[in-house]
Amino acid sequence: MTTMERIASPIAGIEQNYPKYKLVAENIVASYNGITAVKNVSMKFKDKAVTALIGPSGCGKTTLLRCLNRIHELTKGASITGKVLLDGEDLYSNLQNPIVLRRKIGMVFQKPNPFPTMSIYDNVAAGLKLNGLRNKTMIDEIVEGCLKMSYLWDEVKDDLKKPGMSLSGGQQQRLCIARALAIQPEVLLMDEPASALDPIATQKIEEMITELKNEYTIIIVTHNMQQATRVSDYTGFMYLGDLVEFGETKQIFENPRNETTARYVQGQFG
Image 1: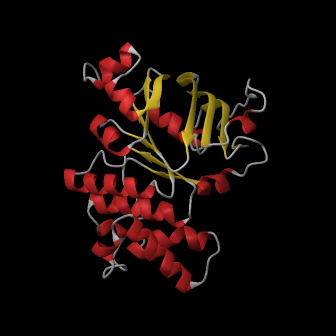
Image 2: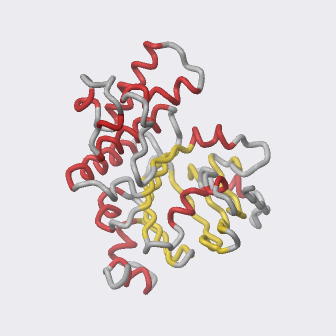
């Protein structure tokens, strides 16, 4: 059975302290079977901005991302302490329904995972129908709108009945993004969304992220430092479970304050 541990934030009244931030992580400690993967990390994510999490493999980036919408707790042996606030509300409060909050904080995984037995259309519409929407005209409009936002509509508009798995890898990833957008999240988490894609598909994903930040708060994990500089407004560098440095992307890459950050962004290790 999954173990979830909770402690109160040491900062009283934190809910009132961050009015200009969409999401706040406070003193997050996350473990797997007693092995700590994230060590007392605190971050503040601005609304309608892209924040990149960078660092070498195994540094805790993906674990931290999974803590932000309570997916971490679904892993057997996982535990977490600390606080995550969405618009000032503690997501780990006993009053919160994890299923509902995961609709508010959508996630796109590293490997495209379209529903294998569903058409392109049904992949995007699945969450809408699951949430009780039955108006076909409205569903059609949302599906089209989300496929347009994910830069996929022009490529699939005449083939919506084809299986989602028939698409190329890059198209499948954009389909998964359209599926995540369909349930109208407030925050979009992306775990290495372009790591397995060719340069052309990667460019489309990056262009889409730049457009989407006009409407969404986006947090992206990436190993590609050039990608972080292209798409993000803010960057956090993690190493061995610690958040070493966090600031505006330009500052992190051009004038890092920490020596380890400087060595990493200069490609001296990775």
